[in-house]
Length: 323
Image 1: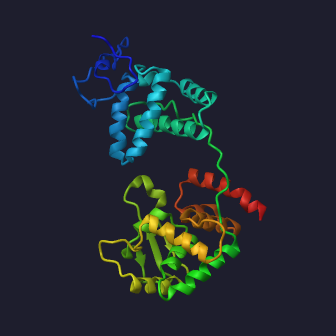
Image 2: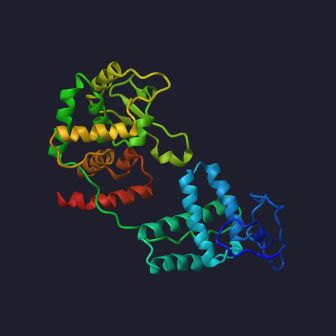
Image 3: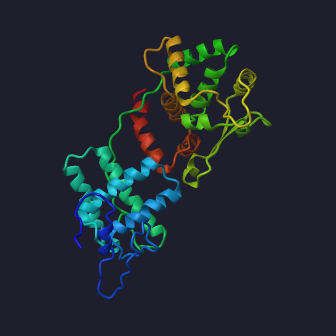
């Protein structure tokens, strides 16, 4: 049988090589046409292990886009080290050399970082599931792509936004509610959209807003935040103006509708820059740093994992020093 060398993957004919024979160890060959190996062991080829990894990511709730990105990165890694290489024989030096090769080939730094993350996630999963005893990627890191400081609002700009939103609140408190959620509490756009009235604890003063995530992979994003002092008045006014149904979110706007509302508010306030949900969240983070809020407390308020917080703080550092 002719073995295809095409870059298209998976290739059924290749399954004859997916469990290379290793002296002193038995090899198991998957059933003909099997898309998912019944067992993966350290003597399995990299190509076959990627079948398993695809199903593992799907089971862990990774998005379709992330699965595709990671699998593409790992196929490139497979071409570099050899797709029939047993996963148990892949050494840290090969991983480091792969990262170096990517950088020397002129690949964008962000792409190299993503591919490095894909490789680390792959081997971490193999170790977590007991397939590998040692993680060859444990101490292999792709260099982080340098990111510019984020867009933030100056104090005068933030005050102008709030003033215009307050003037409109008697008729429609939507914009003022959005400013409080994003600029006073640091919520992400997706978190604002996911809010339900049941997530707002109105039985105490101040109100407490619960940011909830069902997937345990997002455990760092779960948090309970004390609302600003004037939030109850704005919140109750908003509910009277836009009473949500039980199966709807608190905010009646779509993601695009929220962005349009913020941009329009910025124009009404006479601001030259475009206002986005990200701008408001970064402004909240910078305020906390300037106010001397303890690092771990601010990290938890923002719903960031320790690694993500270090990266965020590094991006904000120049803005803190410069003012």
